[in-house]
Image (spheres, rainbow, N blue to C red):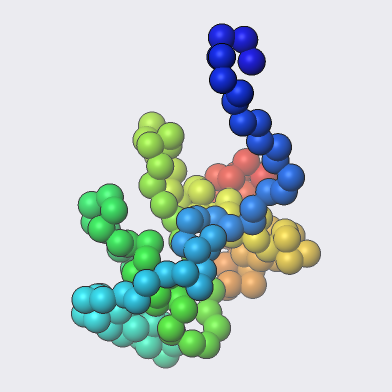
Length: 145
């Protein structure tokens, strides 16, 4: 390359990773989670209440690097059973967009259903949203008219 005396390594992209975060890529190489029993119990308690019909939203908040993603990963890995989970994350790129984490969460859910062969509309109704009352607004929110 011009301006460099020493050889510069060149990399070629050969595949796109489908993992959403670094913890997905490290699966199996994670160290044991220590000292988060109280937080895991709170998440487990919320899941128990949801399974008997309560509507729940759980926010995991904290300083950067404190282990929020790892805590949630451990909960999903150990909670057993099946349930629909939606995970949103804040991004410095969406700071000027109202409801950015929510929009990304809905957009990712619709994309996941599309990969499963469902339309976004069917995916939203699958989790109990009304096709006429709720779905049109969600589609507008994610730019799907």
